[in-house]
Length: 399
Image (cartoon, rainbow, N blue to C red; front, side):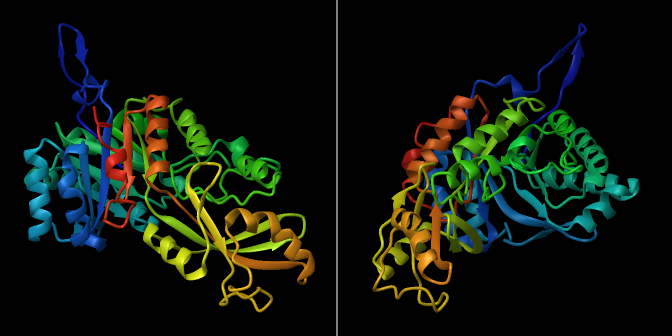
């Protein structure tokens, strides 16, 4: 998601760099402000605009006719106030337009007429609303639409002038790691995003390095070998592999690493031999984990990859699960004891597992981005529900 400016003016045979790369020594911090928590997201971010390079109102969805639906809307007083304050502090305002409708993307981009109309609509929309650019978050695209999407980005880039085009793209796990220990399928290298073309036509490239779960089978196997519970939102080892792969095609001074502020709760089935099956229940903000700790008398601990985690037995799970009051396991204890319970309770048992980022793990990811030499970080999401220590972790990061 996100971008800025194009090559301009050939003077004396020399092509000058776009402003996006001319200031390549800076480190940027951006964050998504979700429309479904409009009141709290604006209150959360407004006092901390000095820590931000860019804010991304996560408010627009793509309609069937190629226009935008404003889910906020941005004309509401709270949204208008934060946009005005951001502009006053030279913080870029680049809203996100999102869709997960693959059929709609195909319909709009495979037709030259509809594609050009969409490009023109977006460019005009950005200029008329005095935004600093647009962030394209088209997810779920078919690999067969890769060329259509690249052509769309090229056209948009040409039409939008001195505004940013920011692109949100998938976190691409190296194939050898994604299929570690298994046969690599024939279509493993087929993707909907052409990284080379994205590098050309996106001023910023935000890699969605979250929702990792089990996509890296190599890291998963390493954790399993030590009987470790492993279902990270984003492991720095995985992020490193993803970014190093992306850097082969995308200028690192355009790359932005996505950092999550939410966690996942799983129902975990443990089998004999330290085998675990993770079923996602829902996402949550860190405050929910605090409630679980208090309700079930369990303690959180820091996972080996840096995020927080805990586990507990819930009376709402299978009847073979011990009562909560009888077995107050924390995450480490559950990992060590689960196979024992499996062998003594019909070969398996279930428990709940929570994993989430806190300010410390977020600070670690910021430091990782700096060490990897990329342009910056993007926080998903800033809505008041994240660990409020994040603002201290972000102080002085923007350069």
